Length: 297
Image 1 (cartoon, helix red, strand yellow):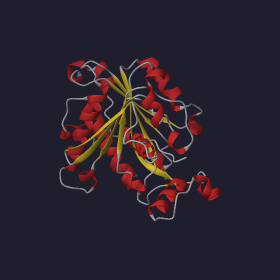
Image 2 (cartoon, rainbow, N blue to C red):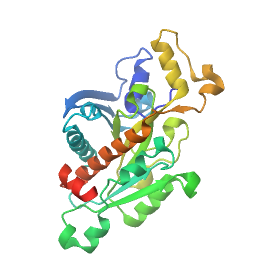
Image 3 (tube, one colour):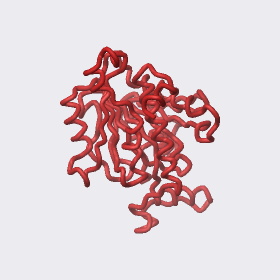
Image 4 (spheres, rainbow, N blue to C red):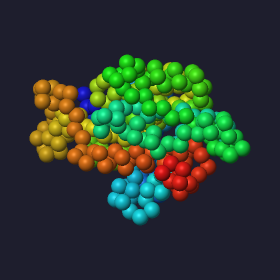
């Protein structure tokens, strides 16, 4: 089994069976915007969900090529585009409140994307409530770092649900690190989906899901792949080299349970966390990139 959290890669796995480009019940399109490539996959019904192994909903994959090349002005353009895509999935009214949850383990760099992103998200709930004359133009946003089960004794979904029941937000944004089946997509693709998040699913350690079904409000999942399964990577490289097709079992204990991440993962994770944080701020508030810099630092 080739592990992946990416709907785009689930579609590729379907295509590799020799089937049609898209299974029944799935629609897709690709476009270029603001120096980025945006690939959209829509799972329209149960047939499409069963074919891709993904819940019904919309999956957007953003490739911020110009930003990754460090082109001048590319960060601002990518952040604005990310905010636009998030707004399209959230579809919130001006008075709607939001809970933003960062999932993952700050002590494990490839899994630290969620909590790192929270450092760039504007927490405004307390300000809107206590100083409406000054902060009334802001949306009410609460920020939560969930930690991980081994440190807290609580599932991320349990913690988010408890906070959501107390705060009663109109929507939840959940940020988490993902897994990819392609080394070339590690730290180079952003996935947004209105189907929520199943933490750990891409690394074979699926936990309780965060979704509309479990939280009672719309949940948008936002993440970046930071690891690739070693056996999956080896089998793909062997196939590209013309050595034939291999499965995870062919690599025995050396491929089982091993995940690969880039050497420069520290810098890449921090860079992407800032982009995600800015995108969330721009999606939730009527602000410019300069405004977010002044307020969030």
